[in-house]
Length: 88
Image (cartoon, rainbow, N blue to C red; front, side, top):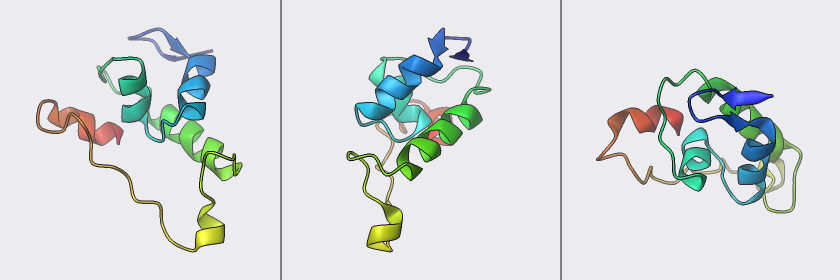
């Protein structure tokens, strides 16, 4: 299933990016050297990232175990592409 029509990213590609350390929609786009365009895929990618991390994979720290919120990294492209912050 396509998640991002603008860049032809499907669910398997998004999952692969999440398995390789991406934690936000913006980091999924950075993984594939792309930028958010229309933004319609951001909610689905955000849902996929939350679901991926909720399954307590070995790469993801468990929020329940640490009792601390996971801090998101500062967006790498915030100064160049202000609309990219919404994908964080």
